Length: 212
Length: 321
Image 1 (tube, rainbow over the protein chains, first blue to last red):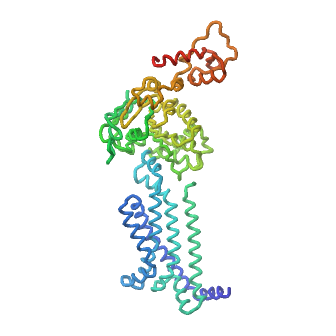
Image 2: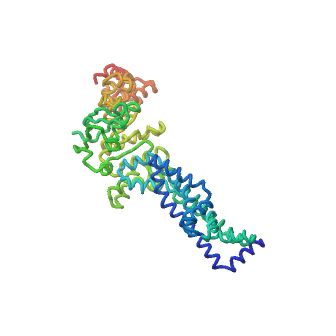
Image 3: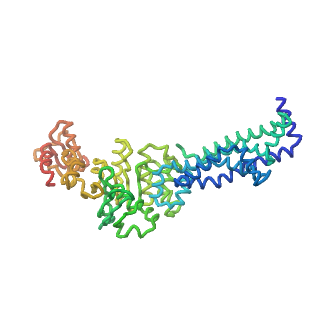
């Protein structure tokens, strides 16, 4: 309890620093998730239809996933330096697998009878995609986004190691100074953010889920 | 005049050893209920799906109302044809009314007209609109789902309906109810219907005419009664159970067999049957009640009598009918 009070006092004594790190953290997370969505949703639609694409890209993304995020961060350094870009790319790579795999599964498991009915009623391919396939796939895609979001929120703390900022700054500083209160100034908001993301995404998912 | 016409239609899937549909020609009149009957893999579903171009024939052509179906854009063709499939294919993320509205929306109908049509169809299939409009498919029983599937196919008021084993996955009791409703609906709607099934009883009950198919070919195309009493070959005979006397009786109306009552006949509490009922039910009623004579009554008014002897006599000369 004492520790929490200290942590709060520390954050209040440096509001500019805290809010800057906080906003930076969120921007990092949203950037990574947005890029991953833009790449992986269309890619997943394709891999669900094409055996070639599915073998190539699902395996590629799975391979990327086994590289630890911190290693990716340092691998980016020669190209982008100690920067926001390096961190954003590393986090994007982290966010891609769950989104791609769930998008692929969502479109692959659509009931063929439903697609046939849609065709038989005279919908064109684009209408079938927009009005039938996408709405039915959306809850499963969102499950992937939820997983990605929580992982990225937690992992964005690593960005501090290459000087890209975010709430990880306080964790790094706290561990260097062996000051647990400062460490908590980073850790607690990250934990809360992750929980909120989890709850919010679950609610969103329920709201788009057709009654079973 | 033929409304739907198949001219030397064949379909061979890539890599298949033999054609699924082999040089089939068939003329279907407007307003008839035609059942495609055959064993699994005989080509009946393939033949059906070539009408709305889910499959394209390898050779031959199909005409609707004298017009080659390839002369229209495929989506426009399909919007003019009602399509019902086995697992209903209802869209699970849309309510009953949204499902029914799909084709009218594609056809660009005004909103009020669509709303009116939805109520009209739900009333027709006996699902009160107030109660069912906003339900999702998962909140309906299997039979109700299939009825909504039917309503959805009827929504654009198509002239032609294609039905691919629509009652195949439904329990026997519900299926019989749906068949009765189908007969009742068709009496009002007079659509040109192509209906695929492998269930002989279903075919005999529903069809104006039956197309019997075997390994991609049309073996016989005739009325249920003619197919039962004059099967084209041994395959048709065994498929439809042509030697099943009771089945024959189910296709003959009481009216056809009844006689006017003899002068000394008195209506005296004998069991009654309607003239449009069939002889199978008449026989069943005779056996159950243990009497020799039934009174044939139309609206409570006796119009004739039917005896066990008459039924027996008819069975003897069923091939001459």
